[in-house]
Amino acid sequence: MRLHFVGAAMAAVICTSGLTGCATFQARSSFSRGEKAMAKGDTDEAIRAYQEAAEREPNKPEYQAALRAARCSPALS
Image 1 (spheres, one colour):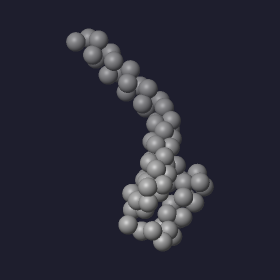
Image 2 (cartoon, rainbow, N blue to C red):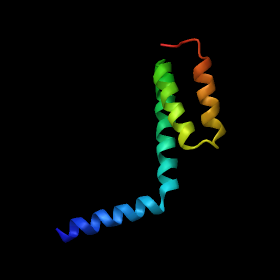
Image 3 (cartoon, rainbow, N blue to C red):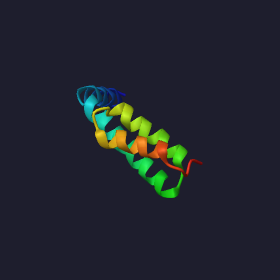
Image 4 (tube, rainbow, N blue to C red):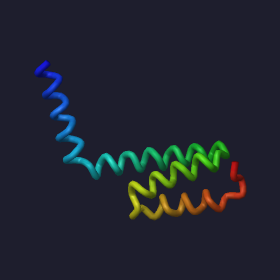
């Protein structure tokens, strides 16, 4: 029981101390999902994924550019 509490406490400390790192990782993951969706021609999913990435990391111009490109894509599903 005590080990479970210690593990949960450590996870909370890691997540709160590295909150920016968590957001960066999630943004990269969303961006990657958007890239895969665009490659498959799933523009709607790509827009959702790029939007998530852009919201998590608004200062990343490549996320903003990918979102704009997906929105302008003629292959909207």
